[in-house]
Length: 224
Picture 1 (cartoon, helix red, strand yellow):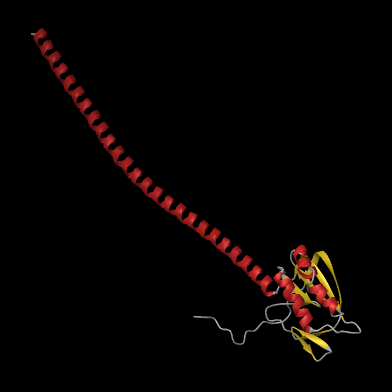
Picture 2 (cartoon, one colour):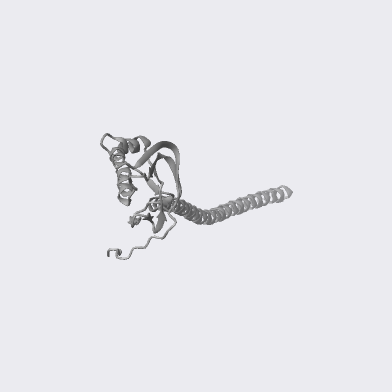
């Protein structure tokens, strides 16, 4: 009897132990499964957030890159406009210039006075030889410059009276400028034939002042 009861008790104990172990293993498996699902969900959530942040970051970087390009382009455009303005001012005569060139001096004699046509002819010769800037007695020659005689007393340049001696300065390739006026039968020979005093020097540092007047176009208009 005691043996039978002991055997039954042993069997019941073993059954309970087996059931407990099964339940325990089931709970752990369920928990692990649940944790894995939660982790996957959490990981998916973080991945979505990461992707969203990455997209925003890329968008921000693209905007910054565009801003930088715009700034660089604006700076380049500004530099180009500034350079164009400087070049325009040079051609219009609003900037003092310095460079190699030639200085020609004309003076009256007892037999002959320098006329406006003599100076105008010299200016044209120098321009044809590539002169980039010209002045007459420190008056800058520009597109609207007039060179005319007033009786026989003086010459008008840019609305101002100038008198002999006349100093005409030009900036450009000094060899070309010299050749243009000194060629045989050229300007120098013609002036000497008129018994007008002329001499010239080739310089490395010719300074020509800026145009001090105002340019105004009376008849010209922008074409539509």
